Length: 444
Image (cartoon, rainbow, N blue to C red):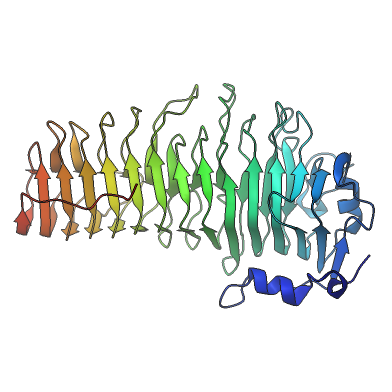
């Protein structure tokens, strides 16, 4: 075993690569284990799981230099235990895995992993409970046939997953990545995590979510510059937690996933500076409803400075959708393009009557363009108190209306509505509204 200073990735150096401005992700480790020196096979022939179990400990970082490492199922749970008992988990504090970077240090899943048994049988990797868990600098290789076990970090306290790529199509139900933070005062960070290969046409026993946030989350999880594409059931599914949980999506690319690309719900949650696209239909037995950003199961989500492009000939209820079990939605400084043969609205807020929610749409500096035909660029149902300020709608498709208000009211200020159909369907209070003009589209 080498000391941290001997291999040059000790607490000080590692902390500088993972720290936020306030140090909340600056984990320190008293011991760093070079896994090659303790017998890990970098050719992928022998499983490294027994060695992980042997050297896992508090204040310990397991370092995997460049190589291919066969990883059979690892959980911080006794291998000989029957049933499920939360008391049997080893609750590690400051425990982590570090590779030399995605594409260099690779965890390889054996063929068939995750394809049989119940939920826990289908796991590939799990660290549950404990605090300050790190996984950084790996490729997760699931390219073998019938392979795709879930890789999940679900501590009570904080965690960091950074520079991780899921390589290969996920062949099994559930999906590759799951996170939670149970402590309301704790933080999780998922940064530069990429799952671009999506999932296969899942069997009729389930579908695959790219990244899932557990409903047990009560802390804050930030997803920064991630790439999730081609999954049969949501790209980022993060609407189930309840306040005070906050999901923060910063940057990244979310595309061609079924149900939604980004799905949020709690009041302090947001998506900003992200690119969201639906340009190809997903292959799945399940109902196809490929929305862009979806507010579900909550109120107060903010969409800011995003580019949303909807152009596929798919079933969809819209580019940005507030579900019937949702309340107030804020959309700011955002560009949405809907192009034929896509037919649904750029923004659709469904009726939330009798669901316990209230609140309308608040759109500021929002631009909607494209040549999608029919329906309406914006459709609000039972959404009282909605507002539009500096909004710009330019839709050239035939019979495309501008803003439709059904049992809703809205104030529209300093805006442009230039459409082939009716600019405004329903009653609204307007001031300084133009019915001719051009609007800004998302960048190519």
